[in-house]
Figure 1 (cartoon, rainbow, N blue to C red):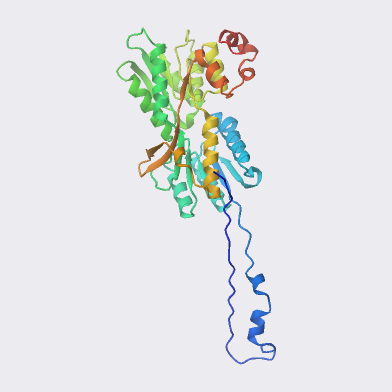
Figure 2 (figure 1 turned 60 degrees about the vertical axis):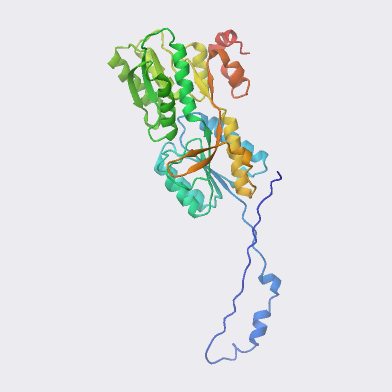
Length: 379
């Protein structure tokens, strides 16, 4: 479909008012009709130039490496490819896990003329106020990666099948624990304010409940690896270091759990799950410290968001084929673009994150991991 800029025409109207009361010589030196017509009509009706559309992308935090290293660069690159001037018309902010700061950033973006808001919320519930404010200004909202809940002001939701992410983690952990009877598993979940974390947890529990012994479970504020490490330390103390597996919701929390177990002298390390295919996690998997991660094709997600935002900003109809589902946010069923996550272990790193160009072999196979890369067939 050919993409065109939406050009608005603003008409300027002139209103001539007559004064009442005794006329003075200065006021009557020319007939009123002459004063009203002294300027050519075409000049009075000259249209103001139409404002160029602006797109705002508001990301939630930096503790998860993907946002600055993957999402933002891929989003910008796709907009440039589509002909959008990112240097001039892209508004970007990162809230650093502060919902109040994100509210202020959104207000600033709307004040500065954002015509589309791409919002990855710090707090899925609190972000409803941002979406409502955007709707009041006629600005469409794309809920990016995390769902904005409790509002009818979300235009589209773009993410992965997040309950499936948790199922992949649970299934992979069960496979790693094959042969153990009632293995003890510690759950290190994500942030309680992130709706995705709720879905990851639900998916994992749907697979593991009744097949494992739940040793301890934590919801990790801010997805903080440091807090995850503290939580795992508490679990180890409670369980006397007897842990058969760790269901960690993402690579950051998984790294925190692994650090706690190393500090406590746990050896060998039990299987640990993750998510996001962070570089450090891929290297830990090769080294045998982490069992798996969930690869979400962030490039595809960011590019889809950029395309959707560009279409909305420029008045191009969004192709019906782009939407492949609906997700209820507690208020309405939101038209959704849902991508497919993939479980990654040592056996398929080469065929997933390397084959897709998500990470280059040279990124992964530094001196400390060269031998492990060779063993895994990564060159």
